[in-house]
Figure: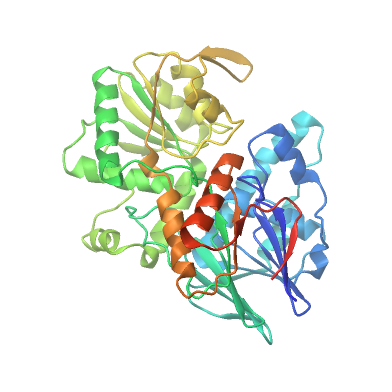
Length: 452
């Protein structure tokens, strides 16, 4: 009898970590960081509740830290099996993890922690990586195999299908929000017996995607008219590349004034290089534009700020400007320096284009707090606060329900496990899955084991 245990991502948005066992073979799906609060982050330092040395393989759904961030720690505690992911996912993971190591080393020094892992652990896990492609079968045993399918979330993101003991289980990873400027729509979980589905937006419906570009254009023009600075906290993967695509399109069409724009994120710049390396993962529209000779991620007026000196020089640019910087939830990175400078300016705008987890500075500002502390300095919030939900890289409630319905079409879906969401979001989606598809659905508890 196969077993599935939820060691992360259960009743939590972050920390994705699932152990699947069949025929004596143990494999892990994702090994993510817990994020969002100091209490959550303390979990990252706890020993894994299983023996990493007994794992045959780890499968990564995509390269975000809440799905990959503890991989070097897994190596540190004894994992020596194979690490499977699509090639873009591996490239981006091994760009992001050294950046995480640097940040964690600084944080560990402040909190008297040992770093979560070392550079040697990072090199060790990199040595176990095996790149794969969508729809390529990976054999794990005589009756145990895996296939990656397109999740449409970020470049190389995957839904992972496992076949075992005559059954199929699909792990959604993070599902995308089609149509997107760059990527193809997600694949469906055909002939599923079990599904593990994310629920970040399980209780919400995104605004119409057809209006998101118009709203972005309006916010840019309004902020420029007022002479302010438009700050966009952006996730280095996907959201930044989508924004650059949109700004490039608006610039080419003459739809926004010529003002200085800055991509102030060395990590995002490196990841943008990865996007340019894998155009075969793009949708038809983006592929057509590339073939026409347009550089999707560069246009006149855009400056890439790689060094801290280049970042600081932005302050000397007078007049209106646009700054895209990490981190996406304002939990660190260069966006904090810009927020410290411009949050109190009523002519400026802070634009959220992604999910803001509970406990983060971004969520507090989004919820309307009027004073924040940045670098131990109290900052009044007087700038305009805007949000565009249509830029979310996560599927919303109707999309999640539609995806589950495709899995139920064959008539033998036995159970759906709802993960990676806040309590209300997961519970809402869980109830709707049962009501609309007439299949059992549960929100598993942390460390809960189920038989499949």
